[in-house]
Length: 414
Ligand code: PLP
Image 1 (cartoon, rainbow, N blue to C red):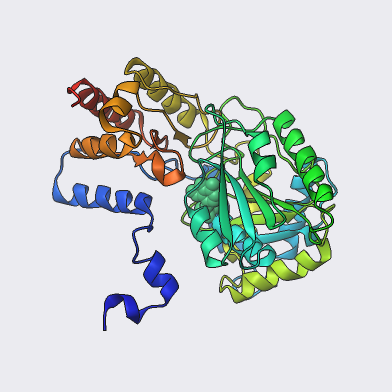
Image 2: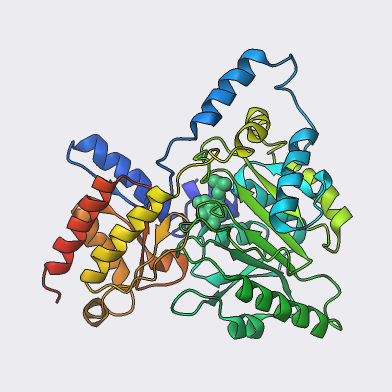
């Protein structure tokens, strides 16, 4: 008996295989380094929110628990509490200018739980899931677990959508286009014009493929960073432009509640198969084992989100982004300033490509790790030659990480 043949082939290949998440490993390495020495560790690897949830969330939680009637912690419909779904539907209707109903909303175990039920409900084995690259690494696993094929289409060098490349990559098997804006790992936020153009090309592809295509071409819009926009504007969405859209989001980031697991899925009221999705998504929530989103977290949302101070201050992330961009540009990195979210994704200076070939990010990460500074190689996200740096740290940690970058970049290269 080997370790590998005790578990399923899927677990052997993925959980025990080389493809297991580098990012989690970096996070664990950071914790180990902290245990073993009291020297500071600058861990800018994981998008783990460092800002506390808003004070309003804490006081609402205490008050709810002290004053609630009995029966608030039991099973409920798999889609979530009706009153919470109605609140979310009303808020999303205003945001997107659509007539969203409570039936279009399913409360989920974060955005990850939302993506799990949406992809399970839409994809069959051998279907293609198209996504712009660089992309959130877990997408590869989410595709694999339903037997679908992830087709990564490179974005332009400044991380805007390459619409022509997307159009060329669509085949009769393309079932879902998965977009992530504001983006992890790049901090890019797709413009309203680009989203309208993407919608137009998908309508063409959908209609053009009508002979072969008997099923709709859906957009799944993953948007957990939508309320961490640095200039105070609202992140554009493809929902107003493209009918067959399913929007997925969470409060892991805007409320700093990643550990509490609360988010939702919104089916466009104009989507083909809307009624089928109303039934499929709660069913998937049930049988994938989520059952329903956490009850207390659901009930807290209307008490927090209805207020302007009911979110964390994205200014802290924006300030870190500015400091990192300035420091890295001085060292010769190419930086596309992030417009939102929790990450910056700089390209290494040309000298590193000359010295180490097309994947110099791995060597840079190794050298930074020796200086107790953790970032993630870009290859993990489908774009080598870059590193992903998380912004969810304190300004002294940014300063410490920049010191390590300076030391590593001033050492001679082979
Ligand atoms: N989608 C993207 C792009 C993410 O970056 C993350 C988390 O980092 C998720 C989904 C999952 O978020 P959640 O914690 O809400 O499940």
